[in-house]
Image (cartoon, rainbow, N blue to C red; front, side, top):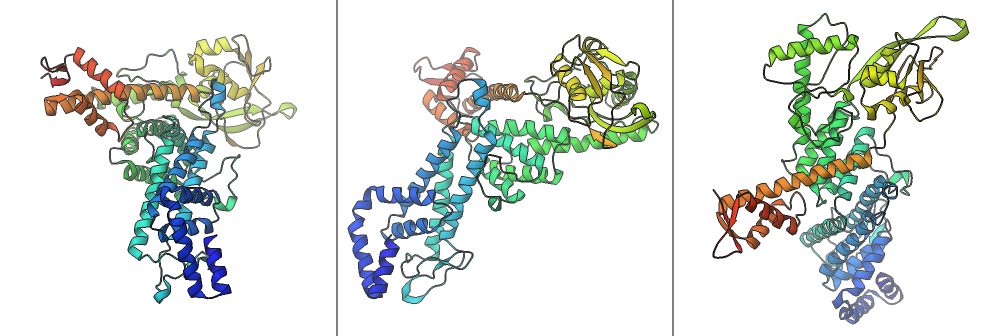
Length: 573
């Protein structure tokens, strides 16, 4: 390498001879570096060697010496764009749905974060916080954490602290620009995967590399550092509206189902996202404040009704503050309602009493409000007693279940056996929830199978019979029966994407009308340019779609074409 040749010359002859040799080498290679090819290939090689930092140090030294730092910066950008593109395009050519779902989105995001982490680490090593001046010999050597020399002081580019800071900033910007360009190679999917990955991290409350990751365990960042990395990555996404939609739905689930590892972490994450994406990123704030208002309301009800037989509590939420949801536990509906959801679902009387009491109290307090219950999000803690086989007697357990599971179990207070058809007709549990609910009670993890199924098997038919497991015995007094995880990711993603498409249409039309109302008269091209500038902060607009929205607004008489110049549009007051 260049450094090795200089060190060899200095060792064999003297320092002056080494400087002369270095000058001749730079002079000979100066013309060859004009097209950037040498530096580009050297940067690709150096960044591919991470975490070995010596190669990049030598490339930076050389580029600064021949006054070609701009080529170095553009080469770093090119490398990031190419490598990020390779990562996000995994599975892009998949044809079948199963093949698409087999793509490991968690590993994709992990690899993106690891790539950015290692490149920024190498760049940081080039610019230590303190560089002491060593007279005529240039700068002090760059040292690693062990005190080893990264770059010889004799041959470090003679640049001042101010220029070093500028170089540091420019290389960081090159990484950002390269990542943005690489992420843009695939529409919507990276944003969806980043949001889902963030959801997993917030549920765990810790950092766990994907099983297929090759990152050493000692290279795993702390939880807070990892959150910061994810937030910064989300800021580089072009489809920010896609990220916000999936993040909002995931956050709603975590808050309503108490699946978040820490409320404080959730609040901190919202603040970080607002700082990265702007104050308009308020979904998390609104939902959390809504829960606080609900908590105060429920406490008022409990104070007014101290004789309630059950420890009843509920969340009374403002529908507009939360992602549109169906009555199931998944947020898949793309419509909202202003009237109660009419459902055949029927609560047992023991559960209905407190519901009716709360509704009466609420309606007396708020005359013009309407409650719409989301039964699929309910949960119940109940006591169950089971016989202990030939030894007789009973054993008591405290079981945490979903509301649908509780409704099924309560039926067995008066029945030893029931068919699936009987359970469905008596409960009114939605068809898509019936099979998973029964499977979770009879086919779940060992130590939670409180029902028996005949005939055995995972498939649930109307004629199948479920019975109370009188001889059930568990290791724990308190346990929870988790629902069977349904494969709804594809359906949920499709539903969310449909809603995003509708939202984008509304945003484009609202922006067009607002701009034309302010300008009154504008050419189509200038209007398109203005719309692109306005909405690019949220998503990459499609010019063809903008033109379609213009035609739609003309048909609905919000806009009209100028009779003398058809390329000019006018606002219709």
